[in-house]
Image 1 (spheres, rainbow, N blue to C red):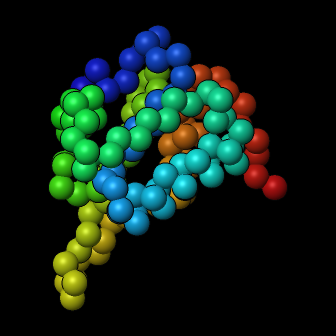
Image 2: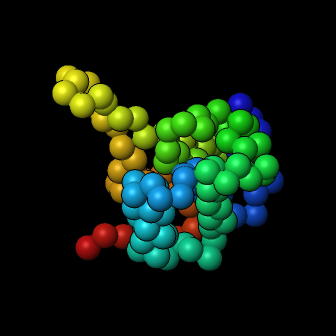
Image 3: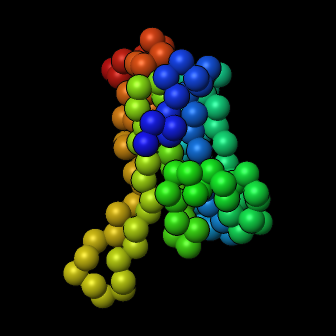
Length: 128
């Protein structure tokens, strides 16, 4: 799916979050993304787009379709750069199930931001 990222196309890393109004997990992911951008010092080099799918925004619905994002499970995040992309949709296991919920974890977001930052030659502070 070459169109998900655009070699030489995006001037900045692109982070797209798909959520819905009143979704506690969506608010937590938004805060996590913002915190990780600040921690890494790359907030000015990232285009962060947040679509509230409960409002059925035309552009948001088009982007969700382009990225194969389900409209009934939120949040979903796409992090795209010059050479690649990462996307994840939260999955919830039924209550009492042996299956495990697969949430969007802060460490995953940070790892993917670092990977995309390297594509742009951005310097990331090292952890002490």
